[in-house]
Image (tube, rainbow, N blue to C red):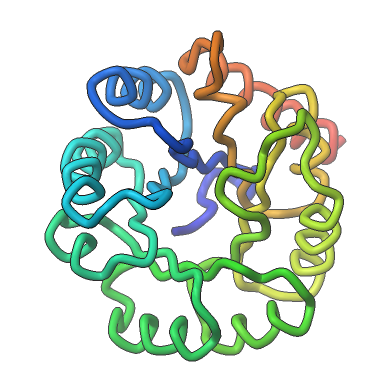
Length: 218
């Protein structure tokens, strides 16, 4: 997963908990049709193996149909069976290292649970394709968590491996996340929350990120 649009911060979508079935598939398709998204991550949130695979079988083709990398979380069998583009690993450095070795550059491997600088550096030594700062489902407030912002800013300033920082539940705080220097900002409730039009949210978010880059370059 690369940041290919003139180094502008890009969006990553996180499917929210409970978002399954035809209604979510329509929301996902509307969001991805509305503007640039680098990847979509689909956590299991406690779903059993069969339910998670059915969820992925519905969502992965939608993402791929828009040229968006579909990322499976911590389930190597579901990853293999659904033809997804990447695997997000929430385990420790050894788990990430094993996944990177097995992938051998053929698909994306991302690392989560980078909650301290020490752990982030340990994970980074395994050379994943990205580090994720935050937790799935953590965007319960309008603003991003300060710790995640601080970690992303520190990492982006000193390490070449791209990072994703978890944004808040409101687009009003998107530029704060982008200002960390992270290559990607992850959104979930800000796009798929109750009463939100996913297409309008993606269009607005991309406009904000473009304006942020123009202001930074001025």
